[in-house]
Length: 612
Image (cartoon, rainbow, N blue to C red):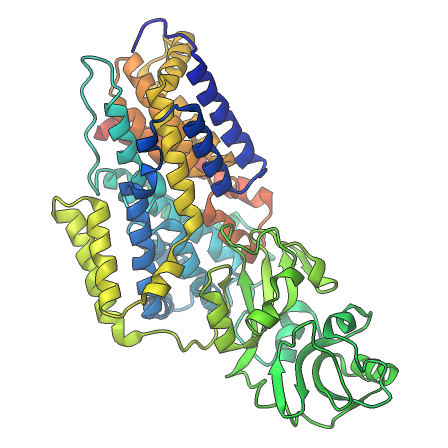
């Protein structure tokens, strides 16, 4: 490293961008992918990174590997692998909570080594919900251990965790800017970090196996989410007692010519599940549909309340379900809970603006946010990441809407879209991809793409389904922030920061420096994405290692592992996905994540020193 490196305008710009990224992501000022694109544009306009390299992140190994893993994970899901795993977990645990928790966490931790962590959480959220419903164990007692073990298991390979996928791209850039005489840093192989990852996962399994019962309140109640009849489901789960009643609009009704949306805004209106006009009947009537004489409504609510509302508005009740009985059969339609993930397009939008009834034929009956349930004025409620939406509609319509991945259905419901006859193809090409990554000289991105293309060619997924399986927010976040990592190194920003830090703590031993790097990275990962923490800290840590005459690879390893040490907040998508369904409070994350964070740091530093 150059002695007395000066603070140049380029370094000042890069440091300002780092501060902007940290604040924007920590305070949620802008969407993470928009922050990445804004940083990309500023770097390009300022000429900090050459134009020919500016957009190369979109085609980088890290981004291609992540896209391939998302397609592979979708293929396994489509062929019913996850449902089979749920059945195996139940058989293996025999309903015993501690055993079920251990089996669930072991399987999800192992799968996260080969599938992107958020994808594993998304795939297993319905599995955990199904296990909770069948075993009577509270969902809150399953989700946080599962999420933590997914994050721990992702450290075992170079494909399950975004920071580790990103590392080799950053090392290639660092090699181009190493000081004279410094040895170049070799890229990591797929299982370079496996020993440390295994220890982390085993430690996490032991932590939850022996201590989980003391970490949550004893009065946690199971959350049952098995589809039942409409009235029973709401009575048991959401406290809405009632039944479905058919009402006919008479010629004297004041509701003739009034839209569904206007009617729903009136106080005392029961839930409108379906509408029949002439010979056409449907569930989830759009808000702009108007009532006419002879229109038949299927409404849900207490019978006395429905009778009073019908009398006040000139509607006549029918004696039984003559028109909607078949449509409301639980095998065809029903109620389902769905969680809104952080990458969803629903986040920040009002429920009414989504037009789900018109676009997909499903109604939003309630919104669950932590310990609050909203049933009134739903159309004006702004959706947040982690919210649970309660839908009603045909199962086929729900399955079709879920393909957009704007929500994750956590209710066990009939699905006709699975392709169990393609199970052999999915498993074969997944195994080929992992085998090529492990035993061949192919780059990880190429090896994984071989498996993804094999699934497409054999009909496990269609091309449209493959496109929908890719979380483009993650892709743009990675591709946009990769040039920032290059800029941190190529402009000398990392060297300047390392110079200043080493000048302050120069007498500290390399061991303590590693601990400091681990804790600083973990702190960044609590307030920004693990990708952002990696991009900022890898060049800085390598230069700090060089300044301390230590092994810079050790410092880089500590960073990529510590970037996943984010158990205290919802900055990690895995934790954001399970927060809503589990009904967790911030204190729960601190109580459970505090010991995990400290233990994770100790294992990481000791493991890296011993291994490298």
